[in-house]
Length: 341
Image 1: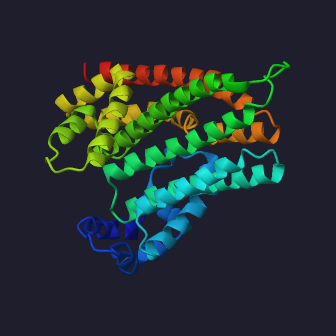
Image 2: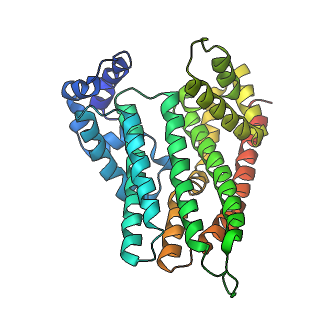
């Protein structure tokens, strides 16, 4: 439950959406003293802890919350924090090209800090009421670029290495498993993102901002005025393709959402049933996005066997992704047939 004083003051942030002038976030900080309350209260207001793993709670969240306060005080918008995480993440990735243990460790620290900044941008957006579709797309794009940089750097590092347990040099052939790993990575992260959004959608009273459909995105794309920038059209098209693929892999989830749209009588029961079942798998699905793969990456780098990371992504995480999709589809089917069929 949110603290009473948090609930009473949340309206302050909704008003900031209408404020376009620079420094609105900084002014809001002065007017909302509840922002300066304990990290636990802010974390409670920020998002559900259902989707956080232990490392998020113990390391990322406490640091990110305090940094977010600083960004708000300085009037730095969420999208600028996202861009900062891009530079830090790419810089850390470049460090991984070195075979020097200390440079590798410095790169790992930078990559972790980029992940903390990735937490900050969402917090700043939510706390200042400036969340937007562009911000979500930009955040996802930066995540992709940061990991793409890691794959490219490790590929260059591996070209002069020998294939595990052989005397054969990787050479240009290293790019075959790397491209395959990047493809699997994108697929895994896409579905983990979808199930996280679906869980929060039902948990937070079916908040439409947490789950956007391809139908809505297509309508927004076609309704853009003629003078819209090329960048805006491109990012909307990319987001549409991204969302369509999520929906393509989740037919029962789509049937559940469509059934709920037509029959709202049992919406509360549907939400409770879905969330209670989803809790069993939500943290496992979250492991497909960042923390688990990062642990394995760092271990592989420290032991100078980066190829092990690609094997882990292509085989282990892809099998987990397939299993997660099946489990969540079974949940959607069960809830649909029990309440909406």
